[in-house]
Image 1 (cartoon, rainbow, N blue to C red):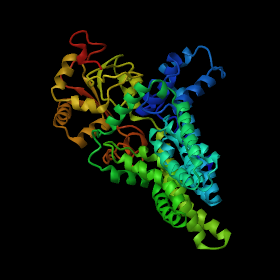
Image 2 (image 1 turned 90 degrees about the vertical axis):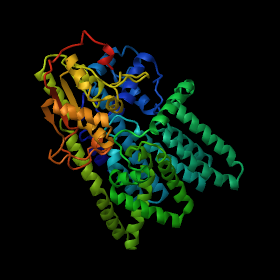
Image 3 (image 1 turned 135 degrees about the horizontal axis):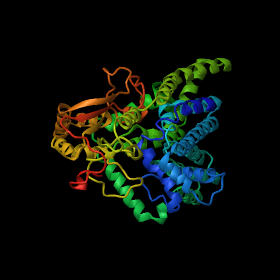
Length: 547
């Protein structure tokens, strides 16, 4: 099972490189780990906890130059600027390892709670579910939270059922480490406190153990994110800004309600069969042991309710619930298999058939997307075309759905208004600001400044078509009328049947069968009656051209 989980994650693991087209991967973790070689151990970033960033940093620190942790790492920093392929691969290998540790943890917890069949089922579901596989192909933090979450759930159950101090410590430590990868894992404190309350009712001495558990939880979190305490003012400011941003719907998300959105993501992120087994397992476990069912299920319910309060919604925000859902699904699957017969060999056969049926959907999706990621990204093809057909540093308007290093060799201009906050590396402005800044009058400014080439990406344009801001639509209408397409690349099997835009499935995951390779539809348009310029404009207001 571990070998299979490893294989599907390694399939297409080097996709996109040397560019990372996932903005969270390129901006939030590996780049911060590299920055710490110059600026010290403060990542100076608190939108996400630092646990994963530190793992990447120390893997590079001890792995670079034969494992010596001190000395000059200027070559490593230079390599990240010039060709970060090996560095990104290191970060992705860490994500893969963390995901497989979670699979191992799910097996151990399932077996300890119920039996070997439950352990195997929980591990298999977490090993092959599409979303955990997809997000361990990126160097992002999500996979890191899965193991401590499953251990924290087990610790809470054992606090209730056993009550010895070791379980308080285990539950507290696991909860703290989980928060060190995902802040939303903080809701794990609820099952811990509920389990502790049941022990306190029987023995007031358990109050001391509860306080100890909370202290250990805090310490574990600070081990992963120490500068949250040392730079608390900045940390709280960033969290407030992040919370404010999460309450603002992203342009292009449409009117989908998160109440229905998140359950729908489970049907493909976890799989239809696993969802059905989860519901069966939750019902049967509730009938058999209500408190155990509550302690496992309360975290997914609370996280779901919390996410429903945000204006934005993404499938991976619900991924911390997958270990709990896998445990419930495993219980339901094994309980169903055992209901077919009293003979052990028939139970195992039924279990194998049921588990195999559940895994068909996610395994096929894992293999299909792995094969797709092995192919060239459409944005890479567009870059090669521009480099081969134009002299160095052609002036070009590039829609912001490419990483910052992609811009090298081009004179890019006419981006959105600047973002008034520090960032590292420098940020090409985000699509929302670009779209709201667009208007038909910009076409004349392009011509006047010699920006005759416009790179149009479906990831950006389709967001405008979903939201329909009038000025932005008028901009695209005029751009089409007054330009010719000189390059076109699409990611679809059949370009006449493009995949409908979706923030999760279209931009990074490519889940739908209509995709043949990664990337958006890319068109390079050349304006009519426009003299192409090269290099930085020498006249005009620089603020009109530069981010």
